[in-house]
Length: 279
Image (cartoon, rainbow, N blue to C red; front, side, top):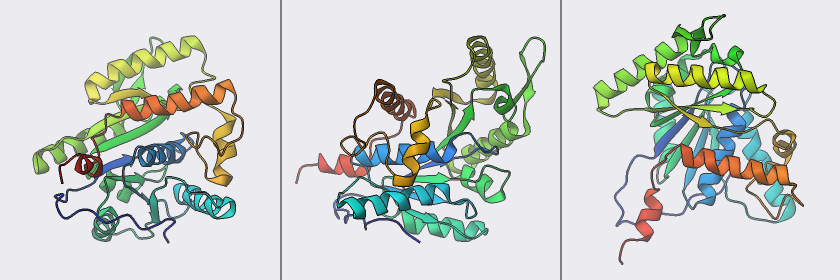
């Protein structure tokens, strides 16, 4: 099931290239993974990029439902919003998944893939094909435990977790097979209500672990009620003019989102580069 319009045709002058794959993966639920994925996809669409999205959590379908709600809002209000072409992958076979990505990604600049918040073989397979792998974490040691284990007295990192070792091995496999590296970004979400001393401990632990596991750390989306309120309409913080009057905290949240997208260091879209070529 798809939720948007067909993408515009790509000029024959522009060489086709594989869309940049952004995989949002975390084996723990409740980290704001799907919300972050949707907001990044919409931000890229607002920048003029051609974006497709694949939700491989066929049971929850949170990202797909968000884009469905967005399409319904467009129709109900008779407006046009930057969007991503989104589908749900209902299968489990890696080969079929790769075929779905090839079809969905044709002519696109970015492919955003949202994975289940649990241990899942298809999510692991998606991670192998990622160009940018995004792991959102709540700012707590409960979530930190997903990627590393710390000493209970000193809060120093003892060792990598199973998940971090898995991603480490995945990145090595990708580098050997394709001579390309996966840019792994751990995104700190829901930092708004974290006690200051705890934030500092997590920050130090993440800094230590990032050197051992090879990921980058980016500041994500703070804990705000508006993210839950926007879901039924499919709107995002970037849809100014359609949200009503925004308070100061919402304007700050919009800047957080822009900073997050900038921190992902994504490549320039091929479609935008093509616009700069002489006729």
